[in-house]
Amino acid sequence: MIPPEDLPPANYLPALIPNYSVKLGFHNLGTDFGNGNLDCRIFQIDSNYRSYIKEKLKCREQHLSAYSREFSFKSKTKKSLIEQIVNTISKEYPSIFEIKQIRGRLRFRNNINKETIYFDENMNFESPNSTIHPKYASPLDALACQFQEDLAVMQLEESSNYLSVGHICFPSSWALEEKIGKDFSSIHMPVQGMNLKTGQYIAEVISRKGPFVRFVFGLSNDEKLNHHSSKNPPDSFVEFNPENPKLFLRIERQTTSPIHDANASLFTIRLYVHDCATFSKENKETLASFIDSMTEDQLMYKGLLKNRDSIIEWFRS
Image 1 (cartoon, helix red, strand yellow):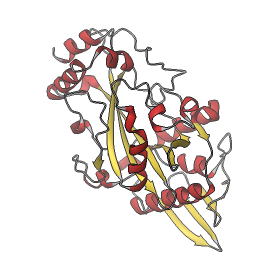
Image 2 (image 1 turned 180 degrees about the horizontal axis):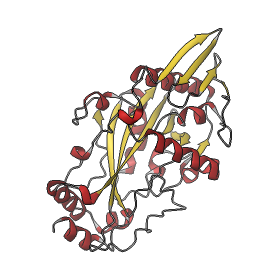
Image 3 (image 1 turned 135 degrees about the vertical axis):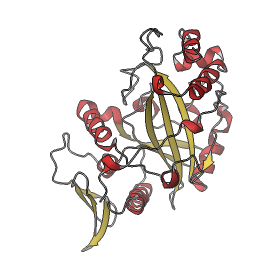
């Protein structure tokens, strides 16, 4: 097994475009962004693995229900979802994640943290012998603490859809407890300029086609992973000081995959945080143009309205 410390993280700065857009911008999974096989994977394990898992466990210890929730989670969807996650990640990283059938049970082993989880034929689990506190609350809770991505599930009904599951430890100024059980359009209601009339159509597409990948970009004053809205509300961006610039780009790599035979879709959200001071002149100009293209409402939504001019000037200095 290659230690995670030896696995370089992907770079998705090339996906940044100079014009801010709220269009979904779906690409087929595997679209080349310059990261080789990583661009083809749902899950991405890299040198930051241990710090991400440490932060997930910290979130759970502080307030589990703020970061992991279920709503009308169908047993068929649960079984298909667990099978899909286990099979996918073990194929993407066979030396790290091993699966094996043993006397009617599925054994899932993580060779980094040495945890072993057993699942029965219905994908119910036996909590591993672990010092984790609080103990894993569900199979999905246990699995989500094995990889760096956050995840969510959209359940599709005949004429509606809803967020049935979320394990979100690294949100960008929003709260899972305010989104769980809501439909696609309601979840994205705060996003300024987004066409919310197509929510049901989008839920249908991602439940039947894909996998797809898209990117969401934002700026913050710190490099913390967890920006739960109780800690970092949208208006928490402090005054930007060009003499002591603290500015970080948050890139969310989001994938969607149909959950087989469940009429549902799996979202994964992998967060990357970059210090803007380390960017090339070209990347800084792209970000300046990105901010310059935002409407006042969009700047307010992103928490950048007060600092727009000073940030653009610093990027172009």
